[in-house]
Image (cartoon, rainbow, N blue to C red; front, side):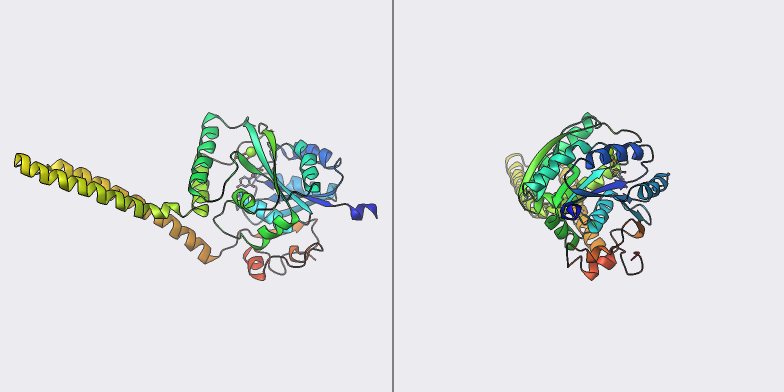
Length: 344
Ligand code: UDP
Ligand code: MG
């Protein structure tokens, strides 16, 4: 009876080829979760791992009744895995964390404390990232500086994919923000709700290696900027004005040199100007192309993720006891959660 009155914490963990670290992750996280004054559910989302991660997770589900498994039909990416976990979560508070123990489970009691104090979003800001080299730290700082410059929303620098928010915020993420090109941690920061910040030291990855390479990081950063800002589109207008000014100066110079020396401005000037103008034009066309690609992805409306099967989860996420109105039927079918795909 007493247990029923306890609040529920959902911990969402995205897993992609993490066989080397899963046992340690479970041992450490479970030990912490047993100490908190809330009930808990640990939702592992297997994002199309090719190693033995799925087998391990299936064993975990059998071992512990608090553990749930969502298995994707293929790899959909880290954010898609977090979104699925959020969709299926039922807790009064939700925490998303990585499986590699870079996000210390020891922070969980403090986060729960913040939820109890009534905070809707707990920003988890890393003070130091031991695993990231100098290059990753510098580019990460530069990324947030540019994002804050371009976007009307202010983002916490050094925020990570260690996310914590209340049921109310989770419901917003389930019903809206269903974009194909997205920036989940940015959305969480822009939701509003009473917000607080906790600092943590990102540990080294316990085993295995990072799944993000430079190419993936660049794509992620560009998409995140484009999701939050239409400033790059306006670049065309600003650079057009700038070029008109340059043209005016060159025209004045040409007339002046014709009048003063009797020789028109040289061939080189024309070539330089043409190169400059065309490269500018191409950059702007490229930026427009990026936005068109995002529009195209949204218009096609393909699934954010496709669930192959779930384990340890008996109910359809659209009919959780805590919440009457789940995601819209449109979203539900887009996410591959059509009838017949879920048990129960
Ligand atoms: N991950 C995932 N799908 C992917 C790539 C990564 O679910 O396509 C998971 C991965 O298993 C880990 C988390 O996302 O739990 C963060 O990935 P990683 O540690 O490789 O990123 P980094 O910490 O190096 O930025
Ligand atoms: Mg990591």
